[in-house]
Length: 304
Image (cartoon, rainbow, N blue to C red; front, side, top):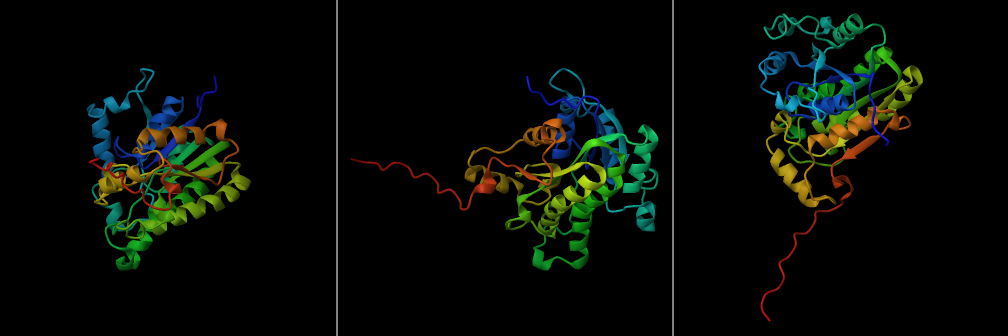
């Protein structure tokens, strides 16, 4: 039997603050395959997430198919807008949701992983991060600041991950990011620079695959997932409409599930995908191949 086996592997999944998004589904799938899991969680949401775990509020979501319970080795505070703690302005560092969590920067996570697990503790890194403060604004009305913030957190942070976490990766390590078709085609309403950030993320995936492959011996890929009604995606305001449209117009006329993305991620992180790098893998029921909407079926004519 050909199986995905990640026993003895350690994954760091960044961007998990609840049990409803792709990041959580990926963490769960990696754990199903045998990997141990560390998380990076946004400081303003970290306290809520840890309380949900402590109080058993998401206990059902933590159940694995073999009867085990998903456990997290560590949950680190992470705000990927900052490469180092000194990059964060004073009002952020002194904010009540930040000031007591320690170093929440990318370099802070690197230091904590090294302290907790040694020099080369990682096999898998998942970038499940995206944010645009003006996501509901049309691109043409997006401010320079809003646009650059979207690119900083949603795209540049993946470069920072590969550069900073690459030296912590064991041989044949795997980086994976999450993208969306708005980087290739127009999705009206998906604004604030997020479409530009996804386009940058995909272009960077190809370049990083070459550079990190030569420098660290690791692979770099992305998954372009179909729309999913996570809490974060629901902030866009029309996620249900997106799901209904893509479901009606996909070769496989069904909505995706977060598990679909988790399973694809586990494959890409596994030795079965050791020759796949620099790729954007679509997990969208085939919607990306369509060039026009499917005409609704007409009812058969009535009468003689």
